[in-house]
Amino acid sequence: MSTPANIDALAAAGTSVWLDDLSRDRLRSGNLAEVIEDKGVVGVTTNPAIFANAMSQGTAYDEQLRELAAADTPAETAVFEMAALDVADACDVFRPIYERTQGLDGRVSLEVDPRLANEREATVTQAKELAAKVDRENLMIKIPATEECLPAIADVLAEGISVNVTLIFSVSRYIQVMEAFVEGISRADEAGKDLSTIHSVASFFVSRVDTEIDKRLDAIGTDAAKELKGKAGVANAQLAYDAFKENLLNNPDWNKLAEKGARVQRPLWASTSVKNPEYPDTLYVTELAGPRTVNTMPENTLDATIDHGEIRGDTLSGTAEDARAIFAGLDEAGVNLADVWVVLEEEGVQKFVASWNELLGTLSEQLEAK
Image (cartoon, rainbow, N blue to C red; front, top):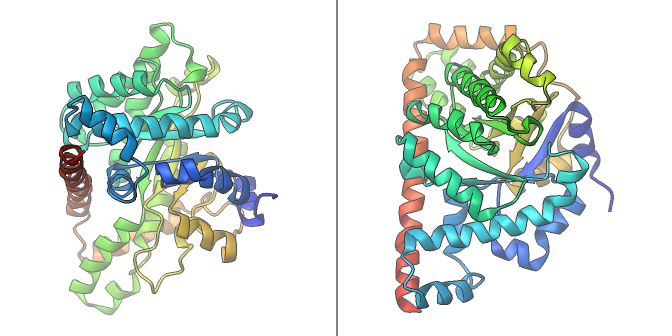
């Protein structure tokens, strides 16, 4: 089957479509291969919530759980044994795309323990351990963009490990992420690493921004505030894209590395399922298409995009001025944006930690029962 027209249109605009989901059922049933073949998916992202959902349902993990239980494996070790196996298998499924795109796509992400979000050294140690365990060139290790983990991003890239930086909400934090990226690649260059093999994406979250800011606009309650509802998420991503061009593509230090074969860190739009049913279900896809970007989607958003998304080519370039006007309006309306970014990052980490802890509890029970 040929790639759906709307996915082809996104690719023509410069956006790679990745699936934000993975499970052993998808792998063993052949569904992941079908999604690649029939829906044009060229990569996969995972997170603690995705694995918590996958591992707590069905029987796909039972055989491995029995083996792990027989070896008296603790839940904290078991979860990564199970996740690493799924990710390695997914990397193998995506290998032809990885080779065809020279490493740009065909990527699969595996996140470090979210409880390490404030620990640089522990994050680096685990990132190296996971990279060695999965042992696939097309793996990306996900590291959160917390202030404490910004140095860890540079450290892991310097080791030659590809990184998906996650939980980015503000443009100011994204600029720090790009700085960490350039530092990491510079250190990899000094260490004699093959720069062409190190890839990175910066996962900029979208829908959660609208959810949080809309709540505050409702509380303010003025007509001017209500007019701004549903506009902040896209505008924030548009400003991030402008920062990408200004702070990375036009960075002389980066361009020197690019001349040596380094691959640019692409913005990746994450949290792209629309949370408010009043908004178009493809809002965070159609409005965020553009060169050198990735959009990772849950399957329902992917299906909606294929079915009725109105892809209009590059909808990112040249949008910064209007996006700045929206943020000026938010500031004028009384939205405390600095507080928004703090709340979103803290909640983002907390949600992943909660999913992880729930999963560990479930696995402990399952291991004891085997």
